[in-house]
Image: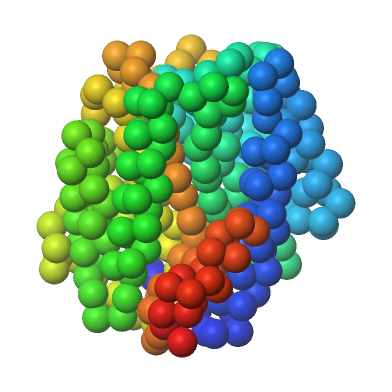
Length: 272
Ligand code: MG
Ligand code: MG
């Protein structure tokens, strides 16, 4: 069942989303060459506790994982793309890191992820990250009343194909609200005009992820981390988004993105 949220409920999700966006920006600043993944995890645990928030990942026991998960972040390095298990690893120059985080505050969840290179980036990695960000923007832009779920999927898939990447549809976006994962599933590729009609109050996490040279994945021996099957690097970008009468509202903007939205030509400026 899909629960549409009231404007007041979306505002409460936005409180959680603001915290997630701010903490992700903070964690990106912590991540540097020589920093241990567990330092990033510990930093997030401390900040989540200080805020009185609750991690949606802690004790998460999905069908595919070797649960329960006992971390608040997914940290996926290089060929790891999703559900990267934080572990004792010192970041190296040129590593491609994805940080994914979902928390609840006062019973409302928000989920967001970003990817970036630590140290000196390879152009191919920047292109891959850019593709996930452009695809995320395209998916968000399609999250409007009257559009169909398939319009979001098609918009994401179109960007992937334009950049030359193939899409794996085993894992994708999802409804979110009182819990991290709700209906509907939001595939990262699909046909426009298909699927449910989008209504104001629908809240979803949109999360394109691509591997450079494959659409196949494999599970790591740690029981959690999902890697590209051929070892190629991968990237992941995610926001929690509300469909509203006046268009998509991104609930997990990071501070630099808030400034961008409010600038001339930004989404907030364009829709007001
Ligand atoms: Mg996530
Ligand atoms: Mg998600």
